[in-house]
Image (cartoon, rainbow, N blue to C red; front, side, top):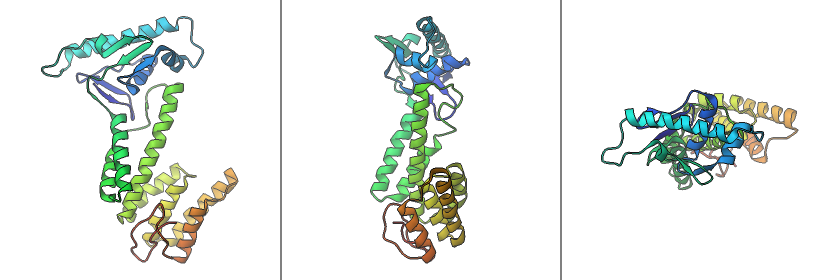
Length: 279
C-alpha cells in the first residue's frame, strides 16, 4: 500500500486507488492511513467524524463506512498488481477489525508523512554535524514530498485538524533549516524570490525575516534588508504589542553597521563584504 497525505488524499492498494468520493468515508480512510499499521480506536474515529456529538447510529454508520472501504480494497486487490511470491491478502487483512478499533495494514508499503519525517530528521542531523550541502539536499527532498496542505481534499475534525497543524509546523521547521543550509552555502541570491513569498505568507515569522534580511544584505541590498526589519517591527508592535527579539535587533544593527558578528544560530560564510553571522 502506498499512502500520500501531504496534499490530496491518495491511498493505493496494489497500485489502485482505494479513496472513496464521499466526504466521511474519505475522513475515515485519512485517519486510518495517518495511523497506518496501528489500531485506531472506535471512539477516536467517532470523535473525528462527529465532533463529540455522534448520532445514535454512529457505530453502525462507522461500520458502513468501513464496509465501503473494504469493497474498494477488494476491487483493488482483484484488479491491481500485487507482490510476486507473496501470500494473497484479503480486504479484511488490509483493513482489519481488532479489539477496540480498526487497523489499516500497509503490507510494508510507504507513507509520504513517514518519509518526510525520516528525511527531516536526517537533514537536521546533517545540519548539526555541519554538513550543509547534505542537509540542503536532504531537506529539499523532504519538502518536495508536499503537494499541498495535509489532507487538502478531506474534511478534518479534531484529530486530523490537530495533525495537519503539527505537520505544517514541522514543514516550516524543515524549510527554515533548508534555507539556513543554503545561506551557509552562499546561495543568498537564489533565495531572494522564495523568501519574498515566504515572508509575505508568514508576516510575523522572525526567523524567515532574519533570513530574508541576510540574503538581501549579502546581495548588496542593505536598504531593502532594513525595510524588511521595519515592516516586521511595525506589524509586531501594532498587532501584538511586541518589539522584535533581541536577536533580530542585533541583526538590524549588524546590517546598519555592516559589522562582522560571531556565529550563533543562523550564519553564513562571509562574502561580498557582508555579515559573517547572525548573533
